[in-house]
Structures are given as structure tokens and as C-alpha cells.
Amino acid sequence: MATLLLRLCGPMQSWGARSRFTERDTELEPSKSGVVGLLCAALGRPRSDDVSDLARLRLGVRVDHEGTMARDYHTAGGGPGGGVMRASGSVSKNAVLSNRYYLANADFLVGLEGTHNPLLDEIEDALRQPVWQLSLGRKAFVPSVPVYLPGGGLRDLPLREALALEPWPLPPRAWALPRGQASPRLRLVIESSFDDPDHQVRMDQPLGAAFEHRTFGPRAIVQDYFIKEAQGVSQQITA
Image 1 (cartoon, helix red, strand yellow):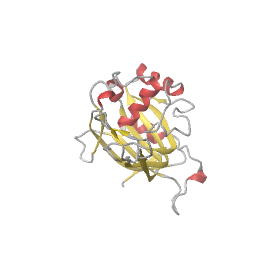
Image 2 (cartoon, one colour; image 1 turned 30 degrees about the horizontal axis):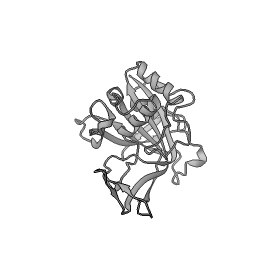
Image 3 (cartoon, one colour; image 1 turned 90 degrees about the vertical axis):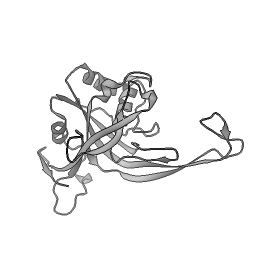
Image 4 (cartoon, helix red, strand yellow; image 1 turned 180 degrees about the horizontal axis):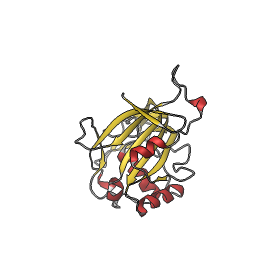
């Protein structure tokens, strides 16, 4: 197996998995559906195109810097001469209020595991020269650093090992570690099996051939923590 690594870092990110109507949530790390959407933008795939090959890739996330959850209070419409279009096609004169949550100053190392085939090479090339603008969950939330790794992101390693061994990108002055702790304690979120007794469920697995149907199903993940040593050696610890 091979793993393609990419970095998702920006002042604002939002990875909703349960959003409905006026409450727009975010997970604490990138969602599978959100990452697949980012790949589609890089590859130039419209919503009507098949994404099953991308959805089959196994997703893992290393949280290099936990984001701070914040709320954006939104209003739309309600002004003079304005209105908001309803799903029925009619126009409402009332303002629509919504709460939209996002992560501030988060930094993630994302891994996509698959067989070492042309798809991973194609994705990496597309991340370097994307067809459409890349965003971190919402169109206005753009990355602050390139999504691709400058030296290349393909690793001939399984997913967890690739995430654990990759050097931490933040300088020592940014660690802000607790007293007595010499190395950062990082969180891993790895796509798993429903047979794993420690699995949790995320409703972000794209179903069907195309994104335009907006159908998502359950996905099993496991979380744990490890100490990232300066030499790149990782020590797993319990939560």
C-alpha cells in the first residue's frame, strides 16, 4: 500500500458532517466528504462525475495543531428590496438567521491510502496545479500554505506509519508545550473497520457514483494519541 500526504492549514476551516438548515456544524478534523470534495476541485471533476475511486481511498488525519471552535452568526436577506429564495422557488422577505461553526488556526496532516496506482500520482499533480480553487470546507476558507508537500507527498508506507513518521511542520517556538513535556502530543484519526471494538462513527462517507446526490453514509474511525519525538520516532500513548 502507498499513502499520499497533504497539509490542510488555514486561519479558518469547516468540516460539517451533520449540518441541517440553520445550524452548520464542524468536526474537529477534516471529514471524508470534505477531503473528497477538495480532491474533486483539484482534479476538475464536476458534481455529476463519478467519485467512487476517491471515496475508496482510506483517510487518516494527524492533528498537528488543534483548532479553536468559533461561531459565525449569519444573516441573509431582510433588507430593503431584498429577499431569500426558498426551495419552493418563492422569495421570503424575512431574514434567515444561521449559526455557522468553524475551526480557527488548525493545522492537519492528511493521509490517503490506496494501492500505488496512477490515481495517487494524478491527485498529487492536481494538487500542485488545481483546476479550481481549493478550499477548506467552505469556498471562502482558503489554505494559508500549499496543500501539497513541497518535497512530494507520496510515501511507500501504510497510512498510520506514514502519518506517524512525517516530521512535524511547526517550529519549536510554536509548540507551547506543558511544563515538563519535551515533545508534542498529537491526535490521530484513522479510518477503521466497524469490527474494531474502539471504533466511532462519522456520517461522511460519500455514497453512490456522483456528489450531486449529496448522499453520505457511516464511516468507522479510531482515535489515539502519540508523542512526536524530535527525531521522528513516535511513541503511542493512551488517551
